[in-house]
Length: 399
Length: 153
Ligand SMILES: Cc1cc2nc3c(=O)[nH]c(=O)nc-3n(C[C@H](O)[C@H](O)[C@H](O)COP(=O)(O)O)c2cc1C
Ligand code: SF4
Ligand code: FES
Image 1 (tube, protein in one colour):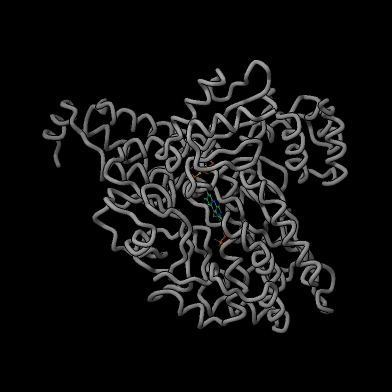
Image 2: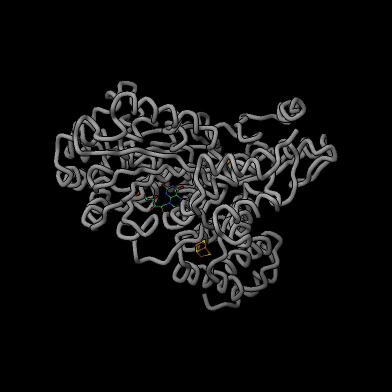
């Protein structure tokens, strides 16, 4: 169901959620998040209350709240829309996070591609400061909080939270080993909460309206609303806000998709869904609800789409670990071979699928672990094998 | 007249400080103003932050917005990801490379323009899209894209 909260026309006053949080104890704010059932909106879906509880339990003079505004997953632009229109809500959410974990420093990591949004975000910060919502001893309390904005410089992998922290530290964005997790050892080895733009924008609404209200916004077991960026073959591309757990079909109806051959859900690292399978829900248990939804009508050559995605991953792999660095170019070559009919045998094809398993199981970070999803989905569901050689082997194979 | 790299670094250090965590911000200033990061900038940043030149250079080479080779005064980044590709990005790239006589990642002889391709820039709802010196241009046609680039200084 379409349900507008973050994007609602009637918005609570900026700062109201934070002011209310200041009247609660930090532990109560954490509990509120736990009760609301909110999970991270950046893709991985880690429970927010649990993350904040861990960071608040970590003993340290200095802690950080980091906003992940690196939005690099192909096909997503919902964070851009939030930054353009709701930067104050975002900073307010960061202030609430900071208050609940005991941090006075927030950092927004903004992808270089969005550097033109710097003035908008800076202005939001200035307005918050002018209204006494940022700075020293906010509203005459003990609490002090401020935010700064730092730019990335063009690297998809820096959206991965530990790579992002490395980048903030002025290094190449190479994902770290986990554990330790950022909640205990994050930016400059200090306890750090990293949350997505959309997650942080939802926080003030939860503080104002309560955990139960938020939980009820979702369908079934799901909590809250979710923003989806829809592009590709649709009449009305754009950002839509729906109850978490809504079926993909409903979103496609809103955006005006017809003649659907396939939908890429969750970006290049997500899943490729066939046009005959659109009843599935968008949720952490269903189709990946990260936010990117790209629609392909029946005129699209899906193997060409796969080539485009593979090129992306080969370009964006940080090269730190072997399965990802070496596996991706192999898969890229496999796609070209399948298209040109050069995959010699069923055996060879099976080897590529084994490689996808190896990458999933042994890559260091989410990039390498998910990059082969589209290969599996598209080759399985959409590739045509009319090569004679392949045919004869297939007939001769034991399947 | 372009400012010297050292001057830009000094100014950026004044704003961001000289600790390691500032170097991407400092490099961004240099890269934006000079269109690339010259060796003098790497040396200067290494000197003021106490890092080795190799450490600074490895950061320059990691991030795709930074270049250690000179580029044109204007940098065109055309999104090459799927939503833009389906909306005609290929024709736009072709029109630009034809009109300005350069391949992607090359610079025109008068040092005016470098055309690059880049992964999704988050404007897929208004595809095809490009960034010109960081500013977004959307819903492009080959004619409009050429017109925008023609007008650059
Ligand atoms: C390759 C890769 C790219 C990612 N890119 C982003 C991103 O652009 N934005 C984001 O919020 N999370 C991204 N994530 C997820 C982050 O690692 C992290 O889970 C998230 O920022 C946590 O915030 P949340 O719990 O509020 O979602 C990415 C993960 C991987 C593996
Ligand atoms: S999986 Fe890929 S992106 Fe992630 S650390 Fe390994 S090489 Fe880098
Ligand atoms: S695909 Fe081009 S902006 Fe996203």
